[in-house]
Amino acid sequence: MHKSFGDLEVLRGIDLTLRPGSVTAILGPSGSGKSTLLRTINHLEPVGRGLISVDGEVIGYRRDGDLLHELPEREVLQQRTTIGMVFQAFNLFGHMTALQNVAEAPRRALGTPRRRAEARARELLELVGLAEKAGAYPRQLSGGQQQRVAIARALALDPTVLLFDEPTSALDPELVEEVLAVIRSLARAGTTLVIVTHEVSFARDVADTVVFMDHGVIVEQGPPAQVIDHPAQERTRTFLQRVR
Ligand code: ADP
Ligand code: MG
Image (cartoon, rainbow, N blue to C red; front, side, top):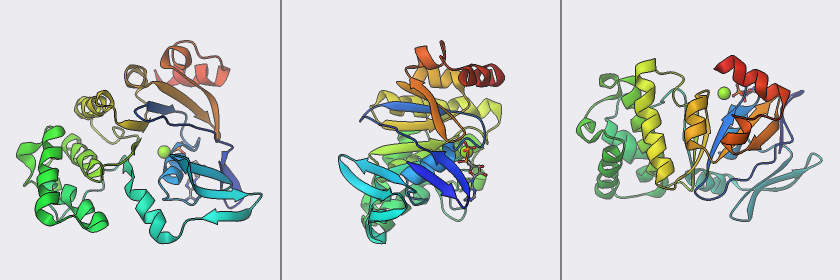
């Protein structure tokens, strides 16, 4: 996949496969295109040149600037519900309780009846360790708790894959671990995850595949024992020395 903003080519030929149940950690310097990659996978940005396919179904395809196939808006929205995303800034609705935040998406996107959406939301809040905070508003929660609600909210649509864009970067250091613990438990449960993170030791623990990106390309990818512990590329080595 290629992706440009005006003259700036931000993704310069990304080739990435996510297998069901796999955990992929994406590392790379600021500005290397990590967020753009996630946003494109999630249809928050249109695909440039190239294609995305889910279970063999092509959902965005351009070649040499010619649009060959693009999903209608309604189907894009539908696709988006199968791909969950958790952002650095938690983006919860401030006027809704934790429970309402989690129940809202299935009600709106899938038309799930309120009772059922709320029952599922309670289960999900329990999963992220916040059962007792169901009635709390975002401002009454710590950053770590808000991010856990955001994770529960993303899970409410039963996504095929869950994308995390630096989920702990906005948190005070003492709150990072509670969020990483939730992500770790999702990984253990077999959820397909993609995590952009600067937490290198977390990436080593949790990921099956580590992808190192720089300037819009994948410089190297492989198991953590290879990419993190024995990087083949100079650029990867330099980056890892800097962030550790
Ligand atoms: P990362 O997440 O790795 O820090 P980003 O994907 O956010 O990188 O950004 C990659 C490059 O694309 C940066 O140079 C950034 O300024 C540029 N960029 C990102 N989004 C936009 C946009 N909507 N319009 C123009 N340029 C953008
Ligand atoms: Mg980013």
